[in-house]
Length: 505
Ligand code: GLU
Image (cartoon, rainbow, N blue to C red; front, side, top):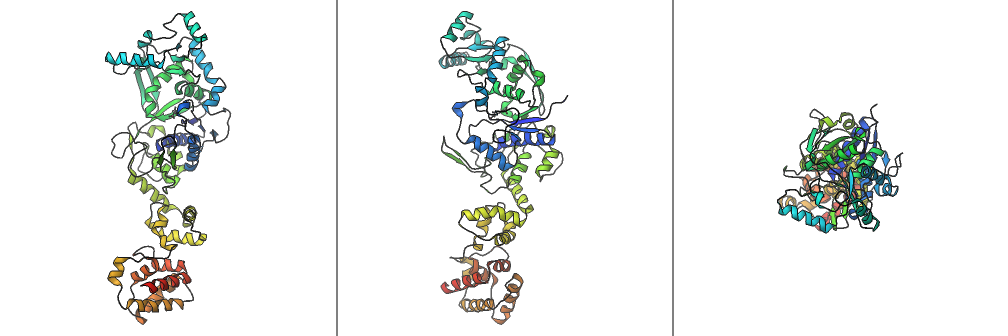
């Protein structure tokens, strides 16, 4: 029987979740949803020295904002396999049981080496020109472990309280073959695989043991992760095999790297392309570094995940704009590339613009209102809806709306110099004062009436420049359709602005 489709996203709370991590979550989510399966959030916090406060909450909030919410796991409700935090699972003795099984079957051993001894070993090997020094089938023979020490001494050392770790006993020269849905069959010789630590001296499991135990116990069907984990996959295959669980192991999928815009190396969280690397603002309290988020930069979550989905995947044709539902129904790991995917900042902005254009003025206003309120601007919704209609064509981002049209909310206190130098002359003040009087007589204050009134004023009053009218009422030389804008501002405000401008010019 085919296993129920269950995918997990298993980040370590060692910092903010960068966009590469969000893509891993997204691909897992899309696959799970496509097959009517589960998407689980597991927090892999076994490395307590790297634990960062706030990271777990950040991960949860990011998934929520992106709309890729797990249906089970930390922050999303306990399912049948709780707890979902590895530190809590360790307290229940879940991992030790498996480590003990490997010790009992002779596939793992105890090692007492101190960090100084491990350093010495590394130096010795480097001096002997060994390229990648590691604790393995050859080198372990010269170290202090349960394979080299007599049994009674091992027992004595353990009883004396000497710290020890449990290591995987990797055979010397064996082919390890495994299948990856994206990469096909991969073969590695065990001589390239080190004797990974499975349990640390504080009793905490390492990632290598913990994720295997959890993937098995949580009945995970597909383990999706970044390419950087590919080199440790052979050790994982051995662990499954030695636990007698090879047939229950999840299918593996190692996603391609996300590359810098010039294709030169992996995209780093400190990338300088000008676009965020994190979904939400992130402050790293250890280093004091601040990272800007997509959300705070005015991206919509649907544009963000659409862009991410196409970093390494394609639907088989040249479609680019796809809703979450379309992504779900088209997604497959077979269409994920093996080679790295270049991050394209311009294209990323383009995605956001396309999504902004698809939104109704009402939806745009809902997103703009909080940004205005943060600036202390409180306007009724109908005004903001119309503002959005008039300004949206010019914007890539929600956050640009205010800057592009601040004159909708603030009366001018300076006047475009270029326009005024060229077009303002000794007659202008008198002509525009007359126009203000004419405007005051309008009873039906709408765009068409304003337009018509301006037209007739041209013959009745004299040559009135429309751009000057714009500068007098907004301060700037260009922007939203003028009569629509004046209609929205309202009669009182427009007359007040005109009079204020004319009194100082
Ligand atoms: N905790 C690992 C990480 O943060 C997860 C890798 C995996 O998904 O197996 O990258």
